[in-house]
Length: 322
Image (cartoon, rainbow, N blue to C red):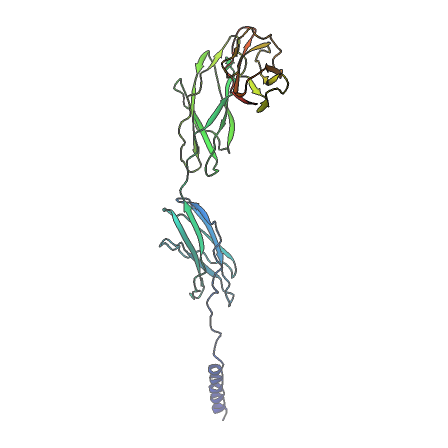
Protein backbone atom coordinates (compact mmCIF):
# COMPACT_ATOMS: atom_id res chain seq x y z
CA UNK A 1 0.00 0.00 0.00
CA UNK A 2 2.73 2.42 1.04
CA UNK A 3 4.96 1.54 -1.90
CA UNK A 4 2.13 1.94 -4.37
CA UNK A 5 1.27 5.29 -2.83
CA UNK A 6 4.80 6.68 -3.26
CA UNK A 7 4.90 5.47 -6.84
CA UNK A 8 1.65 7.23 -7.64
CA UNK A 9 2.84 10.42 -5.86
CA UNK A 10 6.10 10.51 -7.85
CA UNK A 11 4.24 10.05 -11.10
CA UNK A 12 1.85 12.85 -10.19
CA UNK A 13 4.76 15.19 -9.41
CA UNK A 14 6.40 14.39 -12.75
CA UNK A 15 3.16 15.15 -14.57
CA UNK A 16 2.83 18.43 -12.67
CA UNK A 17 6.36 19.49 -13.61
CA UNK A 18 5.72 18.65 -17.26
CA UNK A 19 2.40 20.51 -17.28
CA UNK A 20 3.87 23.65 -15.68
CA UNK A 21 6.78 23.89 -18.12
CA UNK A 22 9.57 22.33 -16.08
CA UNK A 23 12.66 24.34 -15.02
CA UNK A 24 12.72 28.07 -16.01
CA UNK A 25 13.81 28.45 -19.66
CA UNK A 26 16.85 30.63 -20.46
CA UNK A 27 16.15 33.79 -22.42
CA UNK A 28 18.75 35.46 -24.69
CA UNK A 29 20.10 38.94 -23.86
CA UNK A 30 18.18 41.96 -25.06
CA UNK A 31 19.35 43.75 -28.19
CA UNK A 32 22.41 45.88 -27.24
CA UNK A 33 22.31 49.66 -27.23
CA UNK A 34 23.50 51.50 -30.33
CA UNK A 35 27.30 51.67 -30.04
CA UNK A 36 28.60 55.02 -28.84
CA UNK A 37 31.66 56.58 -30.45
CA UNK A 38 32.85 59.35 -32.79
CA UNK A 39 30.86 60.12 -35.92
CA UNK A 40 33.90 61.28 -37.91
CA UNK A 41 37.62 60.64 -37.93
CA UNK A 42 40.71 59.84 -39.95
CA UNK A 43 41.68 56.63 -41.70
CA UNK A 44 44.37 54.70 -39.86
CA UNK A 45 43.46 56.10 -36.42
CA UNK A 46 41.94 53.78 -33.79
CA UNK A 47 38.74 55.03 -32.13
CA UNK A 48 36.93 53.60 -29.06
CA UNK A 49 33.31 52.39 -29.14
CA UNK A 50 31.07 51.16 -26.33
CA UNK A 51 27.73 49.36 -25.94
CA UNK A 52 25.74 47.50 -23.26
CA UNK A 53 23.02 44.86 -23.06
CA UNK A 54 20.60 43.68 -20.38
CA UNK A 55 19.94 40.01 -19.76
CA UNK A 56 16.40 38.97 -18.69
CA UNK A 57 17.82 36.22 -16.45
CA UNK A 58 20.44 38.48 -14.91
CA UNK A 59 23.28 36.57 -16.54
CA UNK A 60 26.62 38.19 -17.34
CA UNK A 61 26.97 39.11 -20.99
CA UNK A 62 29.78 39.34 -23.52
CA UNK A 63 29.67 41.67 -26.52
CA UNK A 64 31.29 41.71 -29.92
CA UNK A 65 31.33 44.42 -32.58
CA UNK A 66 30.76 44.34 -36.32
CA UNK A 67 32.93 47.15 -37.69
CA UNK A 68 31.20 47.44 -41.05
CA UNK A 69 34.35 46.66 -43.05
CA UNK A 70 34.03 42.87 -43.03
CA UNK A 71 35.82 42.58 -39.69
CA UNK A 72 34.11 41.46 -36.47
CA UNK A 73 35.82 41.69 -33.09
CA UNK A 74 36.37 38.74 -30.79
CA UNK A 75 33.95 38.36 -27.89
CA UNK A 76 34.94 40.83 -25.22
CA UNK A 77 35.27 39.79 -21.55
CA UNK A 78 31.90 39.30 -19.84
CA UNK A 79 30.38 42.08 -17.76
CA UNK A 80 27.38 42.18 -15.45
CA UNK A 81 24.01 42.57 -17.11
CA UNK A 82 23.69 46.19 -18.27
CA UNK A 83 27.44 46.87 -17.99
CA UNK A 84 29.29 48.74 -20.75
CA UNK A 85 31.79 46.96 -22.99
CA UNK A 86 34.34 48.90 -25.08
CA UNK A 87 36.60 48.09 -28.00
CA UNK A 88 38.86 50.07 -30.37
CA UNK A 89 39.05 49.83 -34.14
CA UNK A 90 40.77 51.58 -37.04
CA UNK A 91 39.89 51.56 -40.73
CA UNK A 92 42.46 51.60 -43.52
CA UNK A 93 40.28 53.18 -46.20
CA UNK A 94 38.24 56.35 -46.43
CA UNK A 95 34.45 56.06 -46.37
CA UNK A 96 31.45 55.72 -44.07
CA UNK A 97 31.16 52.63 -41.86
CA UNK A 98 28.32 51.28 -39.66
CA UNK A 99 29.28 49.80 -36.28
CA UNK A 100 26.92 47.29 -34.60
CA UNK A 101 27.04 45.19 -31.42
CA UNK A 102 25.77 41.72 -30.45
CA UNK A 103 25.48 40.17 -26.97
CA UNK A 104 25.91 36.58 -25.67
CA UNK A 105 25.02 35.30 -22.19
CA UNK A 106 26.89 32.70 -20.13
CA UNK A 107 24.71 29.93 -21.58
CA UNK A 108 25.62 30.85 -25.15
CA UNK A 109 22.32 32.45 -26.13
CA UNK A 110 22.74 35.30 -28.64
CA UNK A 111 20.90 38.59 -28.94
CA UNK A 112 19.97 40.21 -32.22
CA UNK A 113 22.42 42.76 -33.65
CA UNK A 114 21.96 46.33 -32.44
CA UNK A 115 21.12 49.28 -34.63
CA UNK A 116 24.16 50.83 -36.28
CA UNK A 117 26.34 53.86 -35.46
CA UNK A 118 27.91 55.60 -38.49
CA UNK A 119 31.44 56.92 -38.63
CA UNK A 120 32.73 58.84 -41.66
CA UNK A 121 36.49 58.73 -42.26
CA UNK A 122 38.49 61.35 -44.13
CA UNK A 123 42.18 61.84 -44.89
CA UNK A 124 44.46 64.02 -42.79
CA UNK A 125 45.78 67.32 -44.16
CA UNK A 126 49.38 68.34 -43.55
CA UNK A 127 50.09 71.58 -41.65
CA UNK A 128 50.44 74.77 -43.66
CA UNK A 129 53.91 76.14 -44.24
CA UNK A 130 55.02 77.84 -41.01
CA UNK A 131 55.14 81.62 -40.74
CA UNK A 132 57.87 83.14 -38.62
CA UNK A 133 58.71 86.67 -37.53
CA UNK A 134 62.12 87.80 -36.29
CA UNK A 135 62.01 89.34 -32.83
CA UNK A 136 65.31 91.19 -33.45
CA UNK A 137 67.73 91.54 -36.35
CA UNK A 138 70.87 91.11 -34.22
CA UNK A 139 71.83 89.96 -30.75
CA UNK A 140 74.98 90.01 -28.63
CA UNK A 141 77.15 86.91 -28.58
CA UNK A 142 75.88 84.62 -25.82
CA UNK A 143 72.27 85.71 -26.31
CA UNK A 144 69.52 83.95 -28.25
CA UNK A 145 68.16 84.70 -31.70
CA UNK A 146 64.40 84.52 -31.23
CA UNK A 147 61.49 83.83 -33.60
CA UNK A 148 57.73 83.87 -33.25
CA UNK A 149 56.42 80.85 -35.16
CA UNK A 150 52.80 80.31 -36.24
CA UNK A 151 51.58 77.11 -37.90
CA UNK A 152 47.94 76.92 -39.03
CA UNK A 153 46.75 73.31 -39.33
CA UNK A 154 43.69 72.53 -41.52
CA UNK A 155 42.48 69.86 -39.07
CA UNK A 156 43.31 71.93 -35.96
CA UNK A 157 45.81 69.28 -34.90
CA UNK A 158 48.63 69.99 -32.52
CA UNK A 159 51.97 70.48 -34.28
CA UNK A 160 55.66 70.48 -33.52
CA UNK A 161 58.48 72.23 -35.41
CA UNK A 162 62.16 71.82 -36.19
CA UNK A 163 64.82 74.21 -37.50
CA UNK A 164 67.53 73.84 -40.11
CA UNK A 165 70.27 76.46 -39.74
CA UNK A 166 72.69 77.62 -42.41
CA UNK A 167 75.64 76.28 -40.39
CA UNK A 168 74.44 72.70 -40.93
CA UNK A 169 72.73 72.31 -37.56
CA UNK A 170 69.19 70.83 -37.56
CA UNK A 171 67.26 70.82 -34.30
CA UNK A 172 65.12 68.04 -32.91
CA UNK A 173 61.35 68.35 -32.91
CA UNK A 174 59.85 70.80 -30.40
CA UNK A 175 57.09 70.09 -27.92
CA UNK A 176 53.54 69.82 -29.30
CA UNK A 177 51.62 73.08 -29.43
CA UNK A 178 48.59 74.74 -31.01
CA UNK A 179 49.00 77.55 -33.50
CA UNK A 180 52.03 79.53 -32.31
CA UNK A 181 55.06 79.68 -30.02
CA UNK A 182 58.39 81.44 -29.50
CA UNK A 183 61.63 79.62 -30.29
CA UNK A 184 65.27 80.65 -30.19
CA UNK A 185 68.87 79.58 -30.52
CA UNK A 186 71.84 80.57 -28.41
CA UNK A 187 74.66 82.17 -30.37
CA UNK A 188 78.07 81.40 -28.84
CA UNK A 189 80.23 83.19 -31.42
CA UNK A 190 79.98 86.12 -33.84
CA UNK A 191 78.32 84.89 -37.03
CA UNK A 192 75.48 85.46 -39.48
CA UNK A 193 72.59 83.04 -39.17
CA UNK A 194 69.68 82.09 -41.42
CA UNK A 195 67.08 79.46 -40.64
CA UNK A 196 64.40 77.30 -42.25
CA UNK A 197 61.51 75.79 -40.28
CA UNK A 198 59.23 72.79 -40.86
CA UNK A 199 56.11 71.59 -39.03
CA UNK A 200 54.70 68.11 -38.32
CA UNK A 201 51.22 67.25 -37.05
CA UNK A 202 50.26 64.51 -34.61
CA UNK A 203 49.64 62.11 -37.52
CA UNK A 204 53.18 62.49 -38.83
CA UNK A 205 52.33 64.60 -41.89
CA UNK A 206 54.94 67.26 -42.71
CA UNK A 207 54.59 70.81 -43.97
CA UNK A 208 56.80 72.37 -46.61
CA UNK A 209 59.97 74.01 -45.35
CA UNK A 210 59.64 77.76 -44.76
CA UNK A 211 62.60 80.04 -45.31
CA UNK A 212 65.39 80.69 -45.17
CA UNK A 213 64.58 83.88 -43.34
CA UNK A 214 66.64 87.02 -43.72
CA UNK A 215 70.08 86.65 -42.17
CA UNK A 216 70.39 87.52 -38.49
CA UNK A 217 73.67 88.20 -36.78
CA UNK A 218 75.33 87.66 -33.44
CA UNK A 219 77.91 90.29 -32.65
CA UNK A 220 80.09 91.51 -29.83
CA UNK A 221 79.60 95.11 -31.03
CA UNK A 222 76.75 97.58 -31.13
CA UNK A 223 73.29 96.27 -32.07
CA UNK A 224 70.95 98.01 -34.54
CA UNK A 225 67.42 99.09 -33.61
CA UNK A 226 64.63 96.58 -33.86
CA UNK A 227 62.33 96.75 -36.89
CA UNK A 228 59.93 99.73 -36.60
CA UNK A 229 56.19 99.11 -36.20
CA UNK A 230 54.02 101.60 -38.16
CA UNK A 231 50.30 102.25 -37.58
CA UNK A 232 47.75 104.94 -38.35
CA UNK A 233 44.48 105.60 -40.17
CA UNK A 234 43.39 103.39 -43.05
CA UNK A 235 41.50 106.14 -44.92
CA UNK A 236 41.65 109.96 -44.90
CA UNK A 237 40.02 112.65 -47.04
CA UNK A 238 41.80 115.42 -48.89
CA UNK A 239 41.26 118.63 -46.97
CA UNK A 240 40.80 116.93 -43.59
CA UNK A 241 43.41 118.83 -41.63
CA UNK A 242 46.81 119.19 -43.23
CA UNK A 243 47.09 115.62 -44.52
CA UNK A 244 47.61 112.32 -42.74
CA UNK A 245 49.99 110.94 -40.16
CA UNK A 246 51.65 107.66 -39.28
CA UNK A 247 52.52 106.41 -35.82
CA UNK A 248 55.81 104.59 -35.39
CA UNK A 249 57.27 102.66 -32.47
CA UNK A 250 60.72 101.09 -32.26
CA UNK A 251 62.79 99.42 -29.56
CA UNK A 252 66.57 99.77 -29.32
CA UNK A 253 68.68 97.12 -27.56
CA UNK A 254 71.17 99.60 -26.09
CA UNK A 255 68.52 102.26 -25.40
CA UNK A 256 70.03 104.70 -27.88
CA UNK A 257 68.11 107.53 -29.53
CA UNK A 258 66.84 106.80 -33.03
CA UNK A 259 65.92 108.61 -36.23
CA UNK A 260 63.96 107.40 -39.24
CA UNK A 261 63.95 107.09 -42.99
CA UNK A 262 60.37 107.18 -44.33
CA UNK A 263 59.23 105.79 -47.68
CA UNK A 264 55.77 107.26 -48.27
CA UNK A 265 54.99 104.83 -51.09
CA UNK A 266 54.48 107.46 -53.79
CA UNK A 267 58.06 108.07 -54.80
CA UNK A 268 58.66 110.51 -51.95
CA UNK A 269 61.27 109.36 -49.42
CA UNK A 270 62.55 111.18 -46.35
CA UNK A 271 66.21 110.23 -46.05
CA UNK A 272 68.14 109.88 -42.83
CA UNK A 273 68.95 113.40 -41.68
CA UNK A 274 65.51 114.71 -42.54
CA UNK A 275 64.35 114.11 -38.98
CA UNK A 276 65.82 114.66 -35.54
CA UNK A 277 66.79 111.85 -33.14
CA UNK A 278 64.14 110.72 -30.68
CA UNK A 279 64.15 108.58 -27.57
CA UNK A 280 63.81 104.85 -28.22
CA UNK A 281 60.52 103.09 -27.36
CA UNK A 282 58.61 106.33 -28.01
CA UNK A 283 55.42 106.31 -30.07
CA UNK A 284 56.15 109.06 -32.58
CA UNK A 285 53.60 110.77 -34.84
CA UNK A 286 54.98 111.70 -38.27
CA UNK A 287 52.69 113.94 -40.40
CA UNK A 288 52.54 114.01 -44.22
CA UNK A 289 51.07 117.29 -45.50
CA UNK A 290 49.02 118.08 -48.61
CA UNK A 291 48.80 114.53 -50.05
CA UNK A 292 47.16 113.85 -53.42
CA UNK A 293 44.31 111.31 -53.67
CA UNK A 294 45.59 107.74 -53.93
CA UNK A 295 46.97 104.81 -51.94
CA UNK A 296 50.13 105.20 -49.85
CA UNK A 297 52.02 102.21 -48.41
CA UNK A 298 54.26 103.74 -45.77
CA UNK A 299 57.46 101.97 -44.63
CA UNK A 300 60.06 103.08 -42.10
CA UNK A 301 63.63 102.25 -41.22
CA UNK A 302 65.38 103.22 -37.97
CA UNK A 303 68.99 104.30 -37.32
CA UNK A 304 70.65 104.64 -33.92
CA UNK A 305 73.35 107.12 -32.86
CA UNK A 306 76.04 104.60 -33.85
CA UNK A 307 74.58 104.65 -37.40
CA UNK A 308 73.38 101.04 -37.20
CA UNK A 309 70.19 100.58 -39.21
CA UNK A 310 67.18 98.33 -38.71
CA UNK A 311 65.36 96.34 -41.36
CA UNK A 312 62.58 98.10 -43.27
CA UNK A 313 59.22 97.77 -41.56
CA UNK A 314 56.21 96.15 -43.12
CA UNK A 315 54.07 98.63 -45.05
CA UNK A 316 51.08 100.44 -43.55
CA UNK A 317 48.53 101.28 -46.28
CA UNK A 318 46.64 104.57 -46.16
CA UNK A 319 44.10 105.56 -48.82
CA UNK A 320 43.52 109.27 -49.49
CA UNK A 321 40.11 109.88 -51.04
CA UNK A 322 38.78 113.13 -52.66
